[in-house]
Length: 396
Image (cartoon, rainbow, N blue to C red; front, side, top):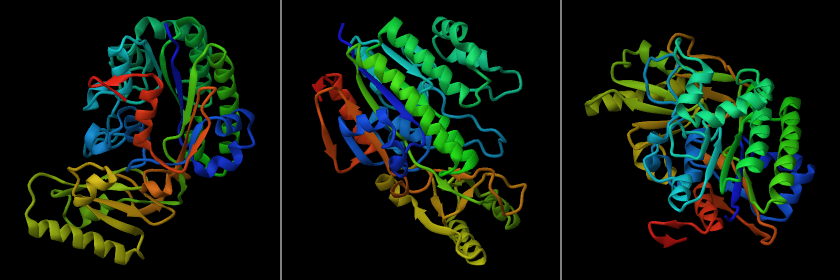
């Protein structure tokens, strides 16, 4: 059986990291010797789950249904994430691979829980008091496969803390490549994203994560290239440093509007949802209240985006508005804190796509071409072509 392709997603790897990764041997080799683009535009909001769904469907969030990392569950302190395959409303790359008789392996790739995948270690965590990590993972993925991985490499783990988690994923990937030879493997590493959130985009911790990623990439490349695999690397978004968060739900509460409207954070941007049918005069009042808030707080909202722009930008068509904050600010769902307060993170993402360009490289040992720009949705077709797959009976 023919080999295939290994796709490695380095969460939060972006164009602003290029100066650093070009100094790293394996990253630089792939940049210089692949079909590459160093100017890839994500979808909006620029969050992990919407963009990973767009990579494997070629669709915008309003089309594939993953319009945020977490679901709209107002007043739930810990909303559920879009963990499960059923949340994606269209075929995925791995669905098409399976229908064409190829084996698949997904390691911590978002929104794959309970998917029809040959070897699946899903990204999911316990979100209820009665749950635990081992059971929720086993129930959402390939049980025997996960038991084997935990038996062999579980000692590397420290819960879901980094860099231990990515070290576990690395060893799981090497093991699976050698023992199972899947035709399509999708790997998601989150070490860099974690360090940027905690310490900032240019912190020493972020730079250390890039060095660890270089080591992980080299190990996978050295193993897989010798076995005849094509190898793709990509990012999903960047990150922007922040100092303060905006609790607009607190402001809505003070103005007796929470029964009509709710802010759902996308970290660096936010959705504004209406709560049921709302009269036009109330809609106007909501917009006026937001504009008045912005005037009172020195213009910390950079842009108010209206619903009619959803097709152009890709966000949830059911949203009433989207809000883009000024540099240094992000949003929180909370309504129990001060309207403006210190951010829980040093850096976030979710802002407009032009602020978050990322990269893509596909190495096959033959093709060397630099593309001036790509949309992240374009990667889907490139990956399908690399596997010589068909969609709806048509060769792509």
